[in-house]
Image (cartoon, rainbow, N blue to C red; front, side, top):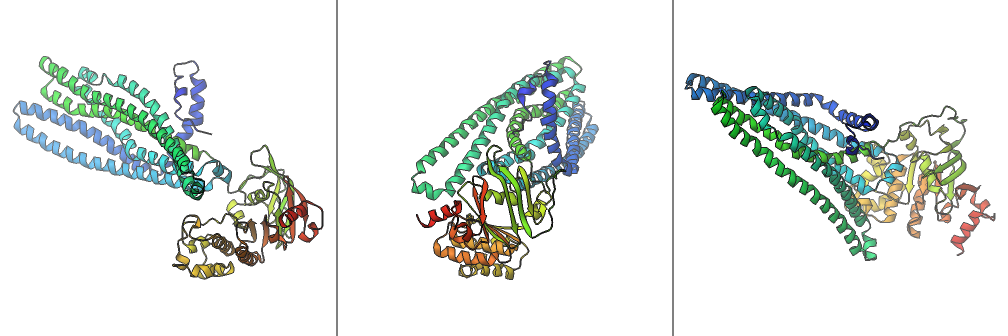
Length: 607
């Protein structure tokens, strides 16, 4: 659910009798959680933050002191007090030197702070994504996820590195200068900032739409990332079906939408720049005209006027920066919102909450996997599994068959806790998965799927995924066991060969044997084979099948297969139909019965 912190529509209820009714829930449910989230990143770097605050306060005070000394020196020169003039000049040099030091402290501390916060945020985003449940990751398109990691984090980084130091420094500089100007001449000080409230209201109104347009830009850029990724991954299909123009038109439409949103943003920036120019010139004009008049008609000295002119830059500067800061803040808030929404998604818990009324242990026996009356639904409406019960003994090989969509792969998802089951109990190694630490639970399984996913790293690195502490000898032994060593040593760089994105440099059979080597190296007690040979030709399938037999040796194995010829030697075959188990017996028994399995077998071999 999208977080709506800084929701302007609700803020408009100020002054209304419904103030607390609308604003208080937003404050409690949205603003405070967001600020506590931000504070989590500020807290580890509070020393550099405090140094930056001390530095900016010091610089602000020094600017006022320097202007005061210029006033004194101007009056001393006009009164021909040369000794005093020299003394003041030396003091100005000292003040400027101290100012340089404090500016360095401020900029260095602000850089440390912003760099530390940015680094922590990026690390936490990556860590959080890795801990998100599979269900959540499948609900977010990869292009949108990439956009949040790149574009949105870039907006936040720009805010922290560029906008935040200005937000920190400009108010201090403005207040310090304004206080001094009021001590010199209160009327002139008021006239020099008289336009500020009016322009602030106008700028705020203009910048409100910038946030909306910026969020639109981020959303469309996410769509562009999605399209680019899909185009690259699906290039063979695009070329085969001549979809180049279709995809290009979609891409062009998204780019046009981005440009349209950016035009709105640029127009508002232009209007705000016009007000910025007015804000920069107006104070100087007021001080020159009205200040000159006061110098001639009152006891205001020429030194006072010069000090005013020096300090008016510290008044007009922050005021003129106001439109830019408003715009940058609005743009950044769109990125903050999308990243904060990502963080609001709960991660996988290391241990599941245990039900007080549920028996979480089973009697010690040789059943390493048990499903007891398990019901599961992906959308909480249609049950994919209905009251499924299976018991698998240690070292047993069990095949699960059935038509597509009957829940075969879903059982794997439940065993590895990619999805939590709604009712019933699942036991692994005589322990309910409610009691397992998720990382430890997944160490019990080695998974080989039809999609032999490889990372764009070396062959050695890809096999090492099975056991990061394995030696080179163990890696080669795993490769030999999976019939992969022969083709690996014939590659130009052997085990150091980069396989390309998704293993594109290797054939389907080679990729599958790599994943088998990975599973062999893991040495997990339970092996899950999800249609591991369905996409291979007959010759390659035979080689992979031989490798599978080696990997399966001494392990409890569950096989999902459409090719029923590959499961004849399984100890048992479990047949799923409509989300329930309809048959459960060895192949030789089921083939003699007039049931679902026999019909599936006959369809494959006699049609």
